[in-house]
Amino acid sequence: MEESGGEDREWKDDISLLVELIQLTVKGSKVVPNSKPTLICTVWTEKLYNPESFRAQMKSIWKTKKKFEIQRVGQNLFLILFELEEDLELIMEERPWLFRKSIILFNRLSQEVERDQISLNSLPFWIKIDSYLPEFDKKDLMHAIGVTFGGVIRSEISDTCCRLRINLDVRKPLRRESKLVGK
Image 1 (cartoon, rainbow, N blue to C red):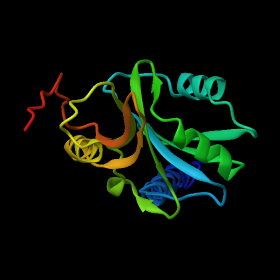
Image 2: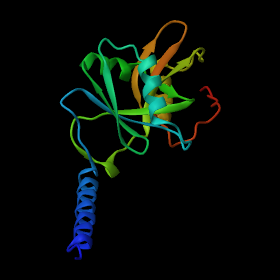
Image 3: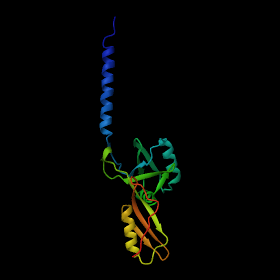
Image 4: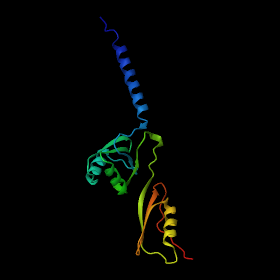
């Protein structure tokens, strides 16, 4: 006696598996934040790396008060879930961070976002200006330099130097040096 429906059952299983995969893909097109303080991040590199290695290194170098979790949500895309808001702030304030000599780009994730709408392409850097010509106004000079790099986030002026926290677009190449011409 022939077993009826054997092939038919396999075919239905294949279809239900395919439907499940399609649903996962549709759900997977959005990145949804957790109720915990959350960052979305990527490593600015074209090199392949082991995501587990990334997780392990970040857990060893970030000194947070409470534990944090790193979830992979795509190719070279991670969610970092913190227990405390102050731990997230600490990681953001101490940027830039590196993984295997590559910059790690972060953004706070507070609402769900389509994967193709995620834009991780800038990060803050400190620039130190040791000596400057006396004929330049310090504030004007810092503003001009900051605008060149993408905007000033914060500035600090002392008698010996100036420091700028700028928002650097990593897609644009940096110039090695710039010369300033006095009045």
